[in-house]
Image 1 (cartoon, rainbow, N blue to C red):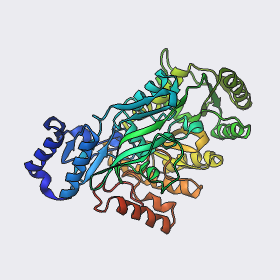
Image 2: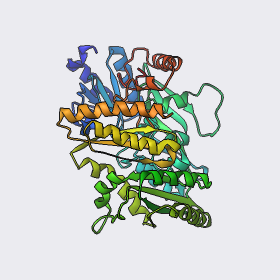
Image 3: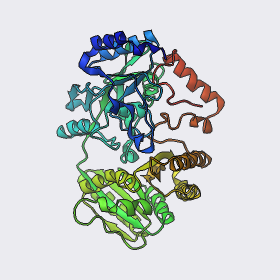
Image 4: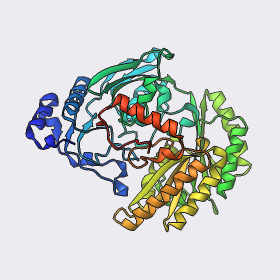
Length: 461
């Protein structure tokens, strides 16, 4: 990186572009949610543009001066994708909070990148509509970041990930040009799918500034169900029973016994969630649709899960998902931090993956637990660590290397929804052939020939 960032004249130029109060050296932009595993960077400068024109001007200046530029949304990422590990300028999109268009009768919305996920969901709901993607930390996560990582969540089981709901993008690409891809239409096969290249690109190809979202009419009813099982094998078999019965749940998540015991007390009210004796696996399911269809699916789901469960419960829906959101924090509190990696395996090999992960963690001397999106085979594998312990962090790093190898060996992928970021840079080489790796690198060069956008992130090898 050119050392001109030390020159106050460059800082003055950024101040002229976005306002002096939006240029600084604020330390909270040096990390994301991977801070609990000891990952932190050091930005030379933070710039907070308030419009697409300002984003374009910031990028143009960085490209002219050969200064690395790190896009940032809400900082909730779990792969280190927004951490400025090699200095440079962090470009935070938090000021871009306008909803430019809202057309309820046409089921669509055009929010800017800084609008929170929860606000998008709230606006949709207030208009009788539904935006299904529901990644964690929805009050903090921003729609631009969700697009950049192609975030998922529990309801991806039925409704897919963020990219399935994006019909168009506005983005700034090097050397500072604003482009629009897609639009307020649902079919677009005219050219190469550049929109989908930017979705999930983690800020390495361009900076998403506004998103055209497709919405849907809100389901009349959503009915949850909890099933407790005595073993992970029985719980994973029940997942296959649900799919084999032709039931399409809106969500089908799992929490293993270790995570359950750590997080049971986080259930709102009273003394927490009472667990059945000898419970080692829990399934959280939900069906939705018209009232009649949801009731019928709920009864069918209960019949399938009840055949092998220790106990079925029909919880309050809001309380259930509130608790599910609290599980990661409750687990982190056990030792002060956790290393959490999300891998994907074929759903029929989920039990094998969970058993092998527990064995990997035990060999490394670490306590572990897992939860995830059962029907997707998406495992959030967690290793409890003391972030101050170099031995813990080294053991976790060794365990995650084994985990990635395991996922690929089982026919899966190194990531399902957290992205590659910095934490998984180079891991794509485990699952892709040489030709695919080469194309990945050539796409990066085509969009970002100087390699200044989020350097060191989403590397194929």
